[in-house]
Length: 251
Image (tube, rainbow, N blue to C red):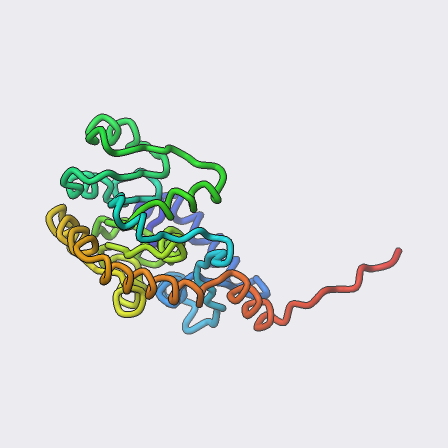
């Protein structure tokens, strides 16, 4: 994220200096996205320095998935840090009376709880990710309404919650902020919307309009997620890095 702690601040200069040093001295560099690789190279004047791009994944074999019962329940789910850039206010304004689960905590939690209707359940921080996966599988639609702002590292990241949504088989409604948003819309049954409550509400309604269409989007999400199983991603990454077990040195 450019200007991580504000433009020209001492903290940002120290962060950039350390980050550049790590990029230059490490034996290997791993980025979550090609967008991040290129942006970091530009930021530090590294030319076209190579890096291994390993996106976020999911443990797809263990994750419970949404069913037609989930669809008929009509629950909406959000997973993430409760900060302005995540767009949770937009989601709450878009629910139109639908039940929802909000998983995560952050500085906005108290404010959001006070504003939310009674059919919104705030789970706070859930330490066991398997419980998070169970909550996701009970939902019908997942939402990632990132605020369109320059002050968000989601423009360079591969947010883990999107892979968690897809591994659960959830149709996703998201704004065009993460670098893979358009790919998700083309291949994973997601829909891109404007950073606006009415646009989000419309996309949620479309996702719940037909069980048949919902099933098609669910299947697309699951098929896409399987390409990002951690067993596949990490096995490929370690092979490309030529990492092999080392013989333990003798004394």
